[in-house]
Amino acid sequence: MAFSFAAAGASSITLMGQYEESLRKTTAEVKAKYPSVKILYEAVDITNRDQVEPAMERIVSLVGDLSILVCNGGDMPQLEDSIRVTPEQFHYAIDIATWGCINMVQSFKPRSTNGAIIINVSAAFTHTRSLHDMSVRYFSRLANFMEHLATENSDLHIVNMHPGVVQRLVNSNDQGAPRIDLDDPSLPADFTVWLASPEAAFLKGEIVWANWDVDELISRKSMKVKDCHDENEPLNGEPIG
Image (cartoon, rainbow, N blue to C red; front, side, top):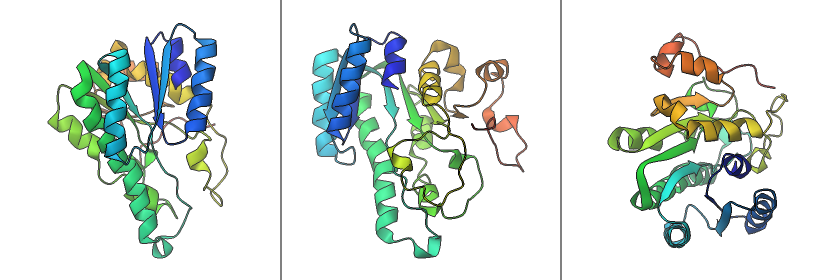
């Protein structure tokens, strides 16, 4: 996503995550391709508030108040039947998907500009029915923290996005899952940039899929996403792959 925001002309971008080597590599690559963009990174465990707060403070001291937050942390645990899942697996998934998000948002909001935008990279599970061996993934999304946050803070522009199926580190435990063609990472990355644009302002508070057609979304802007499908059927995007 850093490349897409840099290509769109972001004045500064900061990457946050626990894998410093990966952060350093991406930062160097973005700098090489977009030298005019101020690109920083902070190696932190987002589930640890004592690490997130000072990191946010350092970022603000370097770039000023923050305009956009993309919450993209997640965990893809080993596929497992609900009967065999351990409490530790559930706890870890909740730590990343819920507490990590809470820490990021609570640290971001007091340091943000008016009309700040938060884009939460969620999952198709918010719209689809249960699938075999994915109880931990569903469970980690049950808190619906972003939905509550959007209801309580009308000054924040919050959108939840399903990114499609993109190969990344958190998918590494998908052994045994049906194989499907993967989406190109540029799809959710470019879609995220669009969600942060004025043209997508009508999607405030919605849950959308990166592989939905943008022109069709705009043509239906007077409708809520939940009104665009049969409530008795799962809501699916365009064919993936």
